[in-house]
Image (cartoon, rainbow, N blue to C red):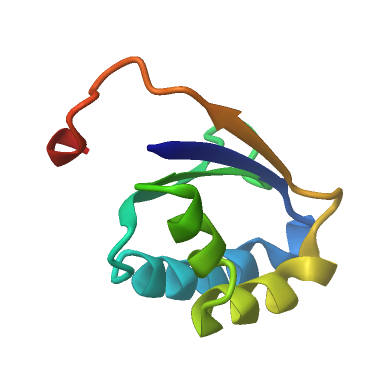
Amino acid sequence: MIVTCVHVTVKEEHIDDFIEATEANYDGTIQEPGNLRFDVLQNAEEPAKFMICEVFRSEADVAYHKTTPHYLKWRDAVADWMAEPRKGVRYDVITPKDEMKW
């Protein structure tokens, strides 16, 4: 499994726009056969900060995701709304190891 947590800081005037675009990306991503999980979280104390936790079965599934129309539309739409470049951090899975539990 490939787990990446993407940390995003959005310009405050674009928070609602970012949420709307990200929800559309979520809707497409969870339909991808290689996607196991796609969580979008907003910081409770700093609402301009978000974390997207993506779990894919394989590197090939991650690569495929980055070619999908919903991802490309999201990437292009949110680019100018970010207060700083987004940062993806990879994690190794400790538990659950069984993908059915994701």
